[in-house]
Each structure stands twice: as structure tokens, then as C-alpha cells.
Image (cartoon, rainbow, N blue to C red; front, side):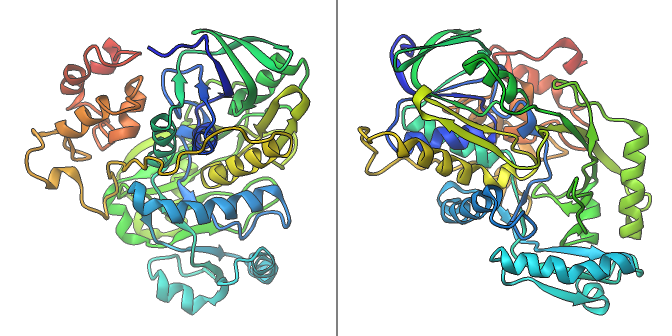
Length: 464
């Protein structure tokens, strides 16, 4: 059992994608790292629901921290993805213009993209757009092509970051909300739901609760989280044949807008909405908004009319009162904050981690011993365009037939270095119960396989 009375170099609050990337970065540098999260598993907050697009930063604010972090992270992701077995579905993206006004804005978007260093972008005529995507609605007027915008697995990537951090000695404490904190000399004394912890530095990656965590740590808030709900509709896998390129809207000041994109799991996704709300722990779906999303998708790709819907879901983005990332440091207090990371967090996480480490390094002389040959974990593949486990003999049967998840995959997840803490974590690691029947036919077997192995066991209503 880990000795949590020992002082850590770094305590990271929050095990979302940014927290997992942060743990990896500091562990790679040789730090003693502990990650704290209030939930039973990683990715249980804002990070569990997104559109899974690997962004180039073509439309990010010029010279912004968001742009720098996205582009640094994009490059690092491409460097590590083969070794970690992280899939990339190479789709490219088109910012499609559907009106005269939107078409007139494409040259400005092109200029912004070029100015942001995304120099392979170009404007397509209507004929070129329809040649690339013949099933689009015929009233499309043109598009900005962004060839290097792609789709990734939104869960295996942060799981890989966390798994590597753990292999390098990082510790993870779940069901451990931060309840109190004080600075004693050069050490933080942290009280959590899972016991006390001492650390020299604290990094706030608490997402939807980032402002509250900051207030616990330093007594004040420098930003305010204003949750923004995004609802999504997932069409049946048969829908993916009708679109091969990510379809983006011409953005506005408030939101990137509704996206239509394939997923690495073989589906077609439309969303998100952008709805302000006060609740930070509830992301309900609403029939009216879901119907609007379906209607939007059909208006853009008419072949989707009457296409079955596999799933619907909603997530919350940790928006703040400003559009910028809320990243700052108080080196004297040993406090670092990565707050207000909104829709680009999945892409930017590796870059944010590098940036925060650079902030830390400005006021510290490195005394850690970085590993010469760090362990690089390989993630199980869940992407439909690559070989899957069910195609390999000896898998002990298919448990979830909708997503073709094997008993071997479920057991491997449960026995992994960072096993799931709850049913949601198991679903994100394996895709079990996430297909057409949403677990109706497989939850009984899943309950049997997971008995006694989850921090938060399946509830009777999950298996009913």
C-alpha cells in the first residue's frame, strides 16, 4: 500500500485529461506525483464527453496560450501515438459555408489559419466540396479545407497518459475530494476525502470545480466557472458511410458550433449544443435539443433522415467568464492553475502540461532524476478502422455484441495498472454497453465479470 504520509513533489487536483497529461509530464521529469480526484475513476467529469477531434488550432485566437498549447500538443501526440497504440482516424475537416454571409467569411478564416501556422488550409469551391462529400446538401456554397484535423479516441489517450505516469511512480487517489488546505512553510498540507497528503507544489486541474478548488487552496478565486452543457446525438454505425470529413460550421464568438463527424468507434456524431447552466454535476439531455441536432444533421446530410440513433449524451465544459485559458502560477505559494480549459482540452492537454512545467521550472532548480528509458504503455485498440480483439482467437467469447467487446478485453481492463473504478470507467476502457442496446443484453455478464472489482459496484438498476 502506498505511504501517503510521505511528502510528494507535486499534488495534482483532478484526473481529467489535463490532470492525466500533467501527471505524465511531471512524472517523466522525475517528480513524485500524486493525483487526487473526487470521483471513483479518471475522466469522470468534463473529460468524459467531447467530440474527440484533434485540433490544429487553425481558428484559435492568434498568439494565444490556447493556440500554443494545442499546436505543441498536436505535435507531441503524433510523436507518441504509434508507441502508445493511440488511433488517429485521418479525416480532415471542412468549415462549410451554407449562406452568402458565411461564404464571404471564408477568406478571413483562411487568413487566420495561415497566420496561425496552419498553412495547408485552402478554400474549396462548391464543386470541390461536393466532389469530396457528394452526400452533402446541394446548397453548400464552399468550404475551408483543414487537412490535418482528425478524430482520435478521447478516452484511450488520457488513459495512456495516466498509465505512463503510474508506471513512473505516480499515485492516484480516488474518492478523494479536496476539503481543506494550508501552506506550512514550503509544504502544502492537504485534507481530502481519502485522508491527508503533503506536497511541495499543487496543480489545480479540477475542471468544473477549478474555481472552488482555488478558493480552498489560496482563499480567493481568480476566475469563475460557468458550466456550459453540450448535448450530442450518436447515429448508428451505418451512418458513417455518408460522411468521411469532419464537417465544421463557420464559428462565432461564443462557440465553435455544431459539428458533424465520424468517430473512431464507427459511428457518426452530431453536437454539441452550447447551453449555460448553474449545475456542475448534472448534464441532462432534453428531447427538444436532441431533435434539433438530428434535424441539423439531416439538413446537412439528407441521407441521415430516418437513420437510427444509437445513443444520446451530454457533457459539461468548464467555461469561465473569459474565453481564454485561465492558466497562472503563484510560485511563492507553490500553486499552479490550469483552469477554464474548454472544448480544446483533449487536444491541448499535453501542451498545457508542458507549459505548466515550464512555469514551475522558472522558479525551481531541478533536483529530480528523470528516467533514462521511461516505460511506454500500449493501449488496447477500440477503433473500428484498426484490428480489434474479437478478431484474435482465444478471447473467451464476445460479451457485448453491439460493440464486439470480448471477455478478454473486460478482464484485461479490470487487471490493468489503472483499472476502472466504476461502470462508466469500464465502458470508457472497453466500449461495453455503449452500442445499440445500451447494455440491455450484456449487463448481466458484465456484472458477473466485475463482481468485487470496482470501487463503485454496478447498481441493481444498472443490471435490471
